[in-house]
Length: 480
Image 1 (cartoon, rainbow, N blue to C red):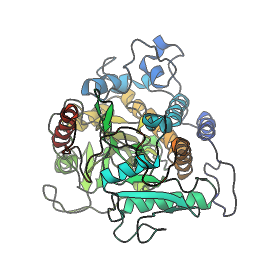
Image 2: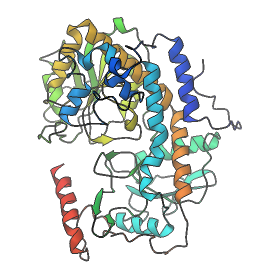
Image 3: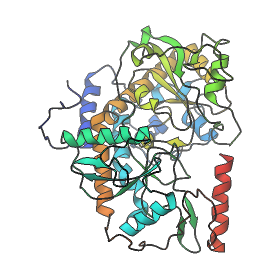
Image 4: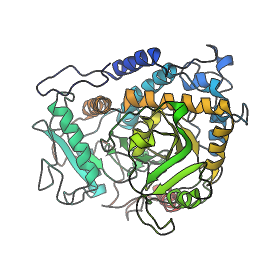
């Protein structure tokens, strides 16, 4: 069965909906080995798995929402049910059909959720105010003004307006190339002439700071599209990228090596242990140094030389080769790791480092449903996790079910076709909220606009009532 429509030039099929794609995956899942049975249809019988599937929102035993604290993740891993079992045992891992249905609902809600702050609309004046706040001038390759013109992505402030090169951010061009492919093939139909601001930083740029007395937001007067933001701190609108293509791989589960595998660059920040802010080190520097001591559990190495890691860099390993490992490790880099999308497309269980950085699809994936978290209790808890997975057949089955859910999610929502669908829904909502206006129109709201390039600092004319809120945002940034 063909999962992705043919890319035939000249063909202009109607845009498939997210629901249609999910229905296709459900049909495949129902007929394939990936279909996993549950443990009953009642809340009391299913525990928190039914809430995760969106089937039992009132279940009293379910952890509420996306609790990303260390205690919350331990509960989501099922340790409140049976500490010896990962995720509380395989029966607590939702079946593929339920996990895809819940994920599809979350993805469908994404565009409206991200643009909720502007539900009353925004103007060209709001966009220009945001441009001044970010210093968008055609020379800054991290903050770009973008629009659709001539059925292509257009950069009106840059010298090369139809292509973002000449010292342009590589991620911006990869996103533009992906959108252009969709436009050329008729998969995307985006209204022309509507300005957008793209932020290409590895973090969000719109700080979620509110001045409750004045009703002002210190941040972005108009929506800003970003590939990554920090949950709970930024309100950037998350946009799909096209950097890491999906190459689904399948290797029989019982023939895989029972080792957690990672191969990548050593570039990363020091991400604190999840939930309590405990200072930690860079996982891509720490874990390669302990691989030699635990070859039966982890194979985490880097592919370039770096201080503080083994001197001999290792070569590239394809995703086809990685598919021969039961566990694939997702290590946070400078920010969220782009490789997670590709890893989910492999029928291996993803062991994901807990962090607050999120991409556009993270709202739809959950621990013990699509991946297994580590970097929760301490910086080496991945060793204990792999040991538990290997020591009990029930834990091995739980990991297999998590791997099945991850791959089904990737096939439904991370293909290029699915990214086009999300982009279409996101842009349609954005365009519906844009009120237009003439250049130079004042913002439609009373925003406090920060000086160019000012990230959480205090402008000279900031009202005293807002000063504390901005100072707090600056301190949070320094601590992170």
